[in-house]
Length: 94
Image (cartoon, rainbow, N blue to C red; front, side):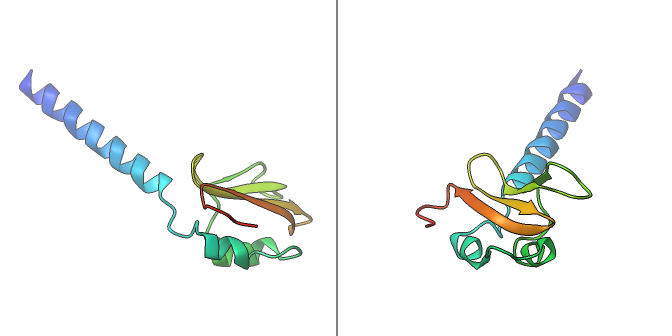
């Protein structure tokens, strides 16, 4: 019984660690948000923000998000070029 309890505590600790790492993208900053310009290519955006945490389509995305629900940068693409951007949780961005 003690072995099971220790294993469960260890699994919970690993899960929490993974969640914290996934939610904290250090590139999601107001300064990086302002570096993203209309017309930039997806590859230029990934140079600034790193690989996106979510995209609506893996091969030819129309929208991608960096960060989590509370703090993020979302970018809208047409033909892999930025046409719009928005941010949540970064303070005043416009």
